[in-house]
Image (cartoon, rainbow, N blue to C red; front, side):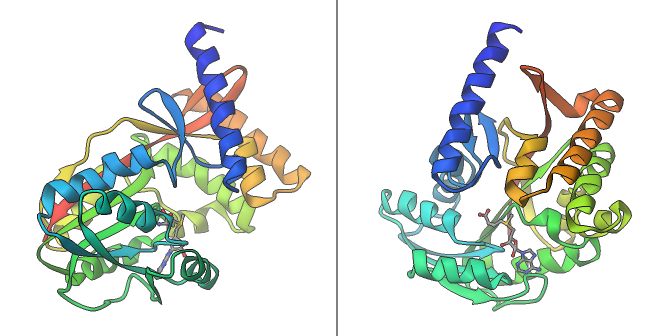
Length: 283
Ligand SMILES: C[S@@+](CC[C@H](N)C(=O)[O-])C[C@H]1O[C@@H](n2cnc3c(N)ncnc32)[C@H](O)[C@@H]1O
């Protein structure tokens, strides 16, 4: 094992213990700028992807943000803190269908306006400066994606900014075959069925949807952030029993042999890898 890999392993262990503290288990390790970070709450990652672009594009002292599928509001809260350091006030609206997440959001961040809303349906029109969505696109049914992008487009004022982030792999088909086997096992559905509801789009697929919704100035936000997910990450995250965990390990081994380029190996453990794809665009 080379020196670099040893370092990787040390870092992944360090970041995992940080996750446990923040209650995220062993899920969500992103390798970015030399260390493993928490994909949901790392301030540097959030700054580079969201806040920096917001400051660069929206020149106002107070802005309205709508987060499509904002979950428990962790992203909005960190963006608000970072913007307030630049003397920008934030009004934030979190649209989600998950009542548990909305309740958490209300309790933790009462200043966020949490609304139960299906984000593939139109919300209010032409009032927001920023529409954002993080780790949601892959769960939107392929057929509904045009509606999802359209509802973000409609929410924005003219000149408003979209920033969207989702995990994906340049080997889209193989990667989706892999994830559908695992998510199928977890949700007791067939992989084929999972491919309809959980398709991780390629960069160009998402870009096409964004263009068709009417957005302009569509740009890739360039950053090299790699998500690492081991078989045991799924186990912790989804409380998987021993038998299913063995099946997941077999899926990992099978795909690793057939498609080694989807994986990274660190100290004998294999990790499926994906990139953080980020697009910004204007209405
Ligand atoms: C992985 S979580 C990401 C949460 C949050 N965006 C973040 O990055 O911290 C995905 C979220 O998308 C929400 N979601 C998925 N489909 C949705 C839909 N059609 N309407 C509203 N929310 C949806 C889920 O309820 C969940 O909260």
